[in-house]
Length: 488
Image 1: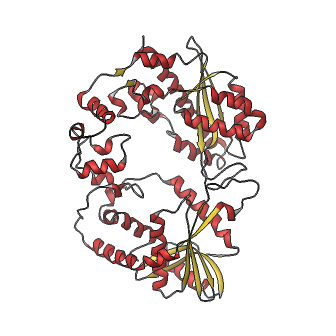
Image 2: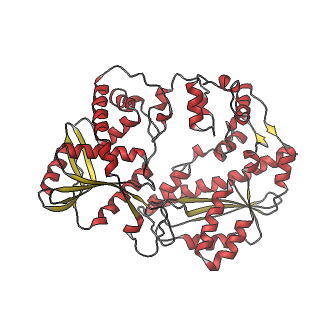
Image 3: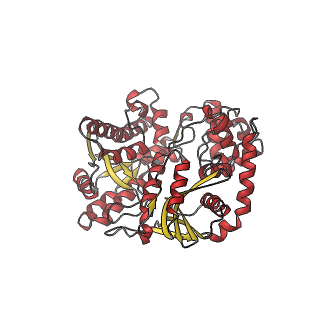
């Protein structure tokens, strides 16, 4: 069996992905998409319940077993089969949900996304090609995806959580195109000479390519794809016009703010410090300062009332309280990982932060959105929470406005770039020195593991989650310290 629906979709993106995966797998880089896959699995399992009783074809590394199990299940006159598996001319696919009514079939592809993208249409078109080529009478083809406006209130309402889109006309119109793509892909893979396909937007869309580092290995060490903040289409446009290196870019029609970044990098310019603007920012603060950072998770299937799919749900915060003499007190909260902890977090937060306090966050839009959401949930806590909301200041502003800038920030004002630029040799401020949890994604993944662990394993994970979040707010203390030193 030469192709599957996932490999076909990779070929649609770029056939060289499949070629390199076959002949040069050692240059492949791992892309962390574990949470995406977990969401997809959870959504797929839930969607199986949409149409009532069903026969599930269990995964087997021997695909022939799945195909034979499907044939057996199809002996029923009317049935619903999940993961129904077929092969035609060495092209394999498993259909998420297949409904059989007499000699007619309806196929459903389930996605954990909140919209229908072009690559999903390619996916189901490939499946439609396989089934109809086998002589099956497929009357309808649908994509099932998540309704982002759905808010859970009580039991899950599957008919409201999911949206079903009829794509029959599209898949019918693409059948010849799919056939041609399959033929071309198989001929492409039969050639053992490495194909000469240049890099471009297809390296990043619809998915990041695990071979981009290999395919871009001959680019200058500092090149257009390294430039933070520049639109991908603009990067590709520059590249296609031969404007690739930083030296090329600084002499191009690139916007001045990007040229400024390149100028710092190429010429090793000293730190830029706008003392007046930094002082103006510092004058907006008052002591004690409450340095606040939340950690949150997202889930496609809302677990509790008042949650929409993929809403940011807080489960942890860190708080460093700094007085005018530089004395520091640390407070924190981390949910147990079992049950709904939103109110518990909100209560702890208003206990830790008095009204009319000066709160500092880095990229405050996120913290404000969390607090506003919590205030909307709990009327009795709303006044205090909105008081916190109204008193948040953003530590990111001096760096976003380039009032403080160094070449080590590489054009970014993310704290993950700002902090090492300000403190390059401080191991206590290096996220790489943490154990288990090094970034927000790992913190979210760790939260989902809490309910599965116990004893020393649970204790160790919680400890490392707390250390990570604590570093986020301690980093803010140190960044503010550097700003204060810069105007002396």
